[in-house]
Length: 493
Image 1 (cartoon, rainbow, N blue to C red):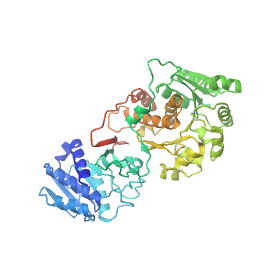
Image 2 (cartoon, rainbow, N blue to C red):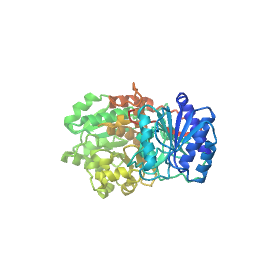
Image 3 (cartoon, rainbow, N blue to C red):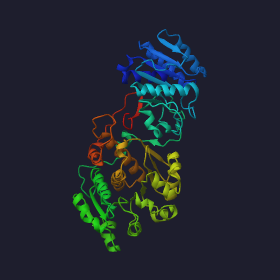
Image 4 (cartoon, rainbow, N blue to C red):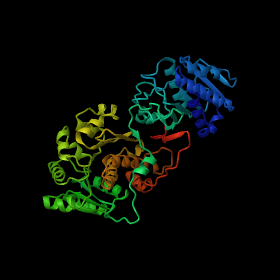
């Protein structure tokens, strides 16, 4: 508890030194999270910061009572049990009300203080949550009642599932090492969080002797009439991700459009027989992406069946190529036949494929893809915040990069182009999907904005333009005790 509180106090002092001069309000709850808050209060007061503590409920654990007693002994801390008025003008608020052991909505005085903290946040105070914002379930991210809206969440040892699922409540999230040790059981069932170092180590290098053949060739099948833009977005993303050659295989009426829109890609009409299928895809491609702008017409369904029957190499299915197999997992598994395959559905597409309600998919996003991945013998990338990539062997990877700029039509096509490139170059669907998800998000984070967090007015052209530099990795060590850090998401209110 003392290590946790001291680490939090140090981070707060480093990040918000100017704010400390305006005073700090510490909200302490009854459990060990409250004990951490008492340690923070004592540490900040020791450096001359004006600290006021509001104790929502008397400390109930031995450790929390001990830390409260030590803090109360400090003449520099103003301690009051009353919660009104909560706001006395402090510039920074520490939320230590409820921690990882709390479930359900805050009640009574705690709920009152949560609402008071949010009111202070609304008038401009910085809010720092200890371990998890109060009111957010650390395991599920559920927040059915009042919950704290933090600017920074300092969590311990590992990234909690709830923080990944409820990013908008957390602000920036920093995982701090507090000496729990290598044998501590820190798993809460969350997927393995990938970061820049993991992506850098997992991305295949392009050698100085590379040519377009060694960088691989990707066929993108889609582009039905009126939907050619989806294929173009996928091609542009693939070209920005290091593919050697791209061929857009589109409906005949879309052929002229895609050649004009993306002149750096080859183009061909949907194959109408085995000979043209072999020429344009089977004998040419190293990997195939099927789905961007494919549509669900009878012609589209026939095209999907023809390609999957004639092509047996690495395959990515997205969008309509997934929806066409609605509630037909067994049939899709048979068609895929054990090939290296990656599916990239958003929650609605996944719900159609698996025969589940969308609400159930969102509620169980960390787990729901595993059984589908096993059934198909393929990797399944479930898009969203966060993005979960499930392997047929039970391995799960999670990417928490990205901004709301990606919440727009065509974003999935960009992801398909990135992932298709990596699938061609690695033939590992799980790794390809995870790298693509992280780089896709990183490109969105890199889009220059005039206001921190602003996404209104950002287009996918902006995201694609940032892909080049999103592949530049800086794998320097983070500043100890920060093990990993996620930026805040969404626009500032």
